[in-house]
Amino acid sequence: QVQLVESGGGVVQPERSLRLSCAASGFSFSAYDMHWVRQAPGKGLEWVASISYDGNNKYYADSVKGRFTISRDNSKNTVFLQMNGLRVEDTALFYCAREFAGPSFDYWGEGTLVIVSS
Amino acid sequence: SSGLTQDPAVSVALGQTVRITCQGDSLRSHIASWYQQRPGQAPVLVIYGLNNRPSGIPGRFSSSNSGDTSSLTIAGAQAEDEADYYCNSRASDNSHYAFGPGTTVTVL
Image (cartoon, rainbow over all chains, first blue to last red; front, side, top):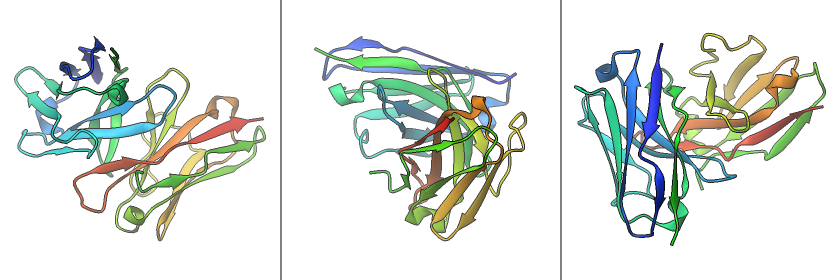
Protein backbone atom coordinates (compact mmCIF):
# COMPACT_ATOMS: atom_id res chain seq x y z
CA GLN A 1 0.00 0.00 0.00
CA VAL A 2 1.07 3.58 -0.59
CA GLN A 3 2.96 5.09 2.33
CA LEU A 4 4.57 8.48 2.80
CA VAL A 5 6.60 8.98 5.96
CA GLU A 6 8.02 12.40 6.80
CA SER A 7 10.91 12.98 9.15
CA GLY A 8 13.43 15.63 10.09
CA GLY A 9 11.24 18.07 11.98
CA GLY A 10 12.20 19.57 15.29
CA VAL A 11 12.78 22.75 17.23
CA VAL A 12 15.16 25.21 15.63
CA GLN A 13 16.16 28.81 16.23
CA PRO A 14 15.29 31.56 13.75
CA GLU A 15 17.67 31.86 10.80
CA ARG A 16 18.84 28.28 11.22
CA SER A 17 18.31 25.42 8.75
CA LEU A 18 16.48 22.11 8.72
CA ARG A 19 16.14 19.34 6.14
CA LEU A 20 12.93 17.38 5.91
CA SER A 21 12.66 13.97 4.26
CA CYS A 22 9.70 12.04 2.96
CA ALA A 23 10.21 8.33 2.33
CA ALA A 24 7.78 6.82 -0.15
CA SER A 25 6.81 3.20 -0.62
CA GLY A 26 4.13 1.10 -2.28
CA PHE A 27 4.14 2.82 -5.65
CA SER A 28 6.40 3.72 -8.54
CA PHE A 29 7.88 6.83 -6.95
CA SER A 30 9.82 8.01 -10.01
CA ALA A 31 6.58 8.35 -11.99
CA TYR A 32 4.93 10.92 -9.73
CA ASP A 33 5.27 14.62 -9.02
CA MET A 34 5.54 15.28 -5.30
CA HIS A 35 4.59 18.21 -3.08
CA TRP A 36 5.14 19.67 0.36
CA VAL A 37 2.17 21.25 2.12
CA ARG A 38 2.27 22.83 5.57
CA GLN A 39 -0.22 23.72 8.27
CA ALA A 40 0.55 26.21 10.99
CA PRO A 41 -0.98 25.41 14.39
CA GLY A 42 -4.72 26.04 14.26
CA LYS A 43 -4.52 27.32 10.68
CA GLY A 44 -5.34 26.08 7.20
CA LEU A 45 -3.33 24.23 4.60
CA GLU A 46 -0.64 26.06 2.64
CA TRP A 47 1.00 24.63 -0.47
CA VAL A 48 4.79 25.01 -0.14
CA ALA A 49 6.61 23.42 -3.06
CA SER A 50 6.43 20.84 -5.81
CA ILE A 51 8.90 18.80 -7.82
CA SER A 52 8.29 16.95 -11.07
CA TYR A 53 8.72 13.20 -11.32
CA ASP A 54 12.20 13.58 -12.84
CA GLY A 55 13.31 16.45 -10.61
CA ASN A 56 13.63 18.86 -13.52
CA ASN A 57 10.83 21.23 -12.56
CA LYS A 58 10.48 22.80 -9.15
CA TYR A 59 8.03 25.41 -7.95
CA TYR A 60 7.69 27.29 -4.69
CA ALA A 61 5.18 29.39 -2.83
CA ASP A 62 6.18 33.03 -2.67
CA SER A 63 6.44 32.76 1.12
CA VAL A 64 9.36 30.30 0.89
CA LYS A 65 10.98 31.09 -2.44
CA GLY A 66 14.68 31.71 -2.09
CA ARG A 67 14.80 30.04 1.33
CA PHE A 68 13.49 26.52 0.72
CA THR A 69 14.71 23.97 -1.84
CA ILE A 70 12.84 20.85 -2.86
CA SER A 71 14.73 17.88 -4.27
CA ARG A 72 14.33 14.15 -4.72
CA ASP A 73 16.34 10.97 -4.96
CA ASN A 74 14.45 8.49 -7.10
CA SER A 75 16.97 5.75 -6.28
CA LYS A 76 15.96 6.08 -2.62
CA ASN A 77 12.26 6.89 -3.16
CA THR A 78 12.67 10.03 -1.11
CA VAL A 79 11.75 13.70 -1.51
CA PHE A 80 13.47 16.39 0.54
CA LEU A 81 12.79 19.93 1.65
CA GLN A 82 15.86 21.95 2.60
CA MET A 83 14.75 24.90 4.69
CA ASN A 84 17.18 27.76 5.26
CA GLY A 85 16.68 31.08 6.99
CA LEU A 86 13.81 29.73 9.03
CA ARG A 87 11.39 32.23 10.53
CA VAL A 88 8.98 32.00 13.43
CA GLU A 89 6.13 32.03 10.91
CA ASP A 90 7.47 28.82 9.32
CA THR A 91 6.34 26.92 12.42
CA ALA A 92 3.99 24.26 11.06
CA LEU A 93 3.26 20.61 10.47
CA PHE A 94 4.83 19.78 7.13
CA TYR A 95 3.15 17.13 4.98
CA CYS A 96 4.41 15.53 1.82
CA ALA A 97 1.80 14.52 -0.71
CA ARG A 98 1.66 12.66 -4.00
CA GLU A 99 0.19 14.40 -7.02
CA PHE A 100 -2.67 12.62 -8.72
CA ALA A 101 -5.18 13.31 -11.49
CA GLY A 102 -7.05 16.58 -11.61
CA PRO A 103 -4.50 17.55 -10.44
CA SER A 104 -4.97 16.64 -6.80
CA PHE A 105 -3.08 15.16 -3.88
CA ASP A 106 -4.22 11.60 -3.32
CA TYR A 107 -1.84 10.38 -0.62
CA TRP A 108 -0.48 12.31 2.33
CA GLY A 109 1.95 11.48 5.07
CA GLU A 110 1.21 12.10 8.74
CA GLY A 111 3.48 15.14 8.76
CA THR A 112 6.57 16.26 10.63
CA LEU A 113 6.44 19.20 13.01
CA VAL A 114 8.78 22.14 12.63
CA ILE A 115 8.94 24.67 15.45
CA VAL A 116 10.98 27.82 14.93
CA SER A 117 11.59 29.55 18.21
CA SER A 118 14.34 31.37 20.03
CA SER B 1 -4.22 35.41 0.39
CA SER B 2 -4.52 32.20 -1.63
CA GLY B 3 -6.95 33.73 -4.09
CA LEU B 4 -9.58 31.14 -3.15
CA THR B 5 -12.37 31.97 -0.74
CA GLN B 6 -14.59 29.68 1.34
CA ASP B 7 -17.22 30.30 3.98
CA PRO B 8 -15.56 29.81 7.37
CA ALA B 9 -18.22 27.52 8.81
CA VAL B 10 -21.48 25.79 8.00
CA SER B 11 -23.76 23.52 9.96
CA VAL B 12 -26.09 20.78 8.80
CA ALA B 13 -28.62 18.60 10.52
CA LEU B 14 -27.87 14.89 10.57
CA GLY B 15 -29.08 13.33 7.33
CA GLN B 16 -29.57 16.63 5.55
CA THR B 17 -27.64 18.10 2.63
CA VAL B 18 -24.96 20.75 2.85
CA ARG B 19 -23.09 22.57 0.10
CA ILE B 20 -19.67 24.16 0.55
CA THR B 21 -18.44 26.64 -2.01
CA CYS B 22 -15.00 27.73 -3.14
CA GLN B 23 -14.57 30.82 -5.27
CA GLY B 24 -11.60 32.21 -7.16
CA ASP B 25 -10.42 33.37 -10.56
CA SER B 26 -8.21 30.30 -11.02
CA LEU B 27 -11.33 28.14 -11.01
CA ARG B 28 -12.31 29.58 -14.36
CA SER B 29 -9.51 27.55 -15.93
CA HIS B 30 -8.67 24.88 -13.36
CA ILE B 31 -10.78 22.24 -11.64
CA ALA B 32 -10.78 22.24 -7.85
CA SER B 33 -10.01 19.23 -5.71
CA TRP B 34 -11.51 18.85 -2.25
CA TYR B 35 -10.03 17.57 1.00
CA GLN B 36 -11.52 16.52 4.31
CA GLN B 37 -9.45 16.97 7.45
CA ARG B 38 -10.63 15.66 10.77
CA PRO B 39 -8.99 17.02 13.94
CA GLY B 40 -5.51 15.68 14.45
CA GLN B 41 -5.45 13.84 11.13
CA ALA B 42 -3.87 14.36 7.73
CA PRO B 43 -6.08 15.64 4.92
CA VAL B 44 -7.96 13.11 2.81
CA LEU B 45 -8.82 13.62 -0.85
CA VAL B 46 -12.60 13.37 -1.33
CA ILE B 47 -13.14 14.80 -4.82
CA TYR B 48 -10.82 15.29 -7.79
CA GLY B 49 -11.31 16.29 -11.41
CA LEU B 50 -14.84 16.54 -12.71
CA ASN B 51 -16.70 15.04 -9.73
CA ASN B 52 -14.54 11.95 -9.20
CA ARG B 53 -14.31 10.18 -5.86
CA PRO B 54 -11.27 8.16 -4.81
CA SER B 55 -11.83 4.61 -3.74
CA GLY B 56 -13.40 4.48 -0.30
CA ILE B 57 -15.07 7.88 -0.40
CA PRO B 58 -18.84 7.56 0.06
CA GLY B 59 -21.17 8.44 -2.77
CA ARG B 60 -22.79 11.18 -0.72
CA PHE B 61 -19.84 13.41 -1.65
CA SER B 62 -20.13 15.18 -5.01
CA SER B 63 -18.94 18.35 -6.67
CA SER B 64 -19.98 20.79 -9.35
CA ASN B 65 -18.28 23.65 -11.11
CA SER B 66 -19.56 26.86 -12.68
CA GLY B 67 -17.56 29.90 -13.67
CA ASP B 68 -15.30 30.89 -10.81
CA THR B 69 -17.00 28.65 -8.25
CA SER B 70 -16.62 25.04 -7.25
CA SER B 71 -19.07 23.41 -4.86
CA LEU B 72 -18.78 20.33 -2.67
CA THR B 73 -22.07 18.75 -1.67
CA ILE B 74 -22.60 16.25 1.11
CA ALA B 75 -25.99 14.63 0.62
CA GLY B 76 -27.30 13.01 3.78
CA ALA B 77 -24.56 14.21 6.10
CA GLN B 78 -23.33 11.77 8.74
CA ALA B 79 -21.71 12.45 12.09
CA GLU B 80 -18.35 11.33 10.71
CA ASP B 81 -18.51 14.06 8.06
CA GLU B 82 -17.88 16.69 10.73
CA ALA B 83 -14.51 18.09 9.69
CA ASP B 84 -12.69 20.92 7.95
CA TYR B 85 -12.97 20.94 4.17
CA TYR B 86 -10.45 22.59 1.89
CA CYS B 87 -10.56 23.27 -1.81
CA ASN B 88 -7.40 23.39 -3.88
CA SER B 89 -6.61 24.44 -7.39
CA ARG B 90 -3.69 25.06 -9.62
CA ALA B 91 -3.03 28.78 -9.79
CA SER B 92 -3.53 30.82 -12.93
CA ASP B 93 0.21 30.64 -13.71
CA ASN B 94 -0.10 26.84 -14.01
CA SER B 95 2.89 26.25 -11.74
CA HIS B 96 1.68 27.09 -8.27
CA TYR B 97 -1.14 25.69 -6.22
CA ALA B 98 -3.43 27.28 -3.68
CA PHE B 99 -5.72 26.04 -0.94
CA GLY B 100 -8.83 27.81 0.17
CA PRO B 101 -8.96 28.88 3.83
CA GLY B 102 -11.18 25.95 4.73
CA THR B 103 -14.76 25.46 5.86
CA THR B 104 -15.63 23.84 9.17
CA VAL B 105 -18.66 21.59 8.81
CA THR B 106 -20.63 20.87 11.96
CA VAL B 107 -23.22 18.08 11.91
CA LEU B 108 -26.01 18.80 14.38
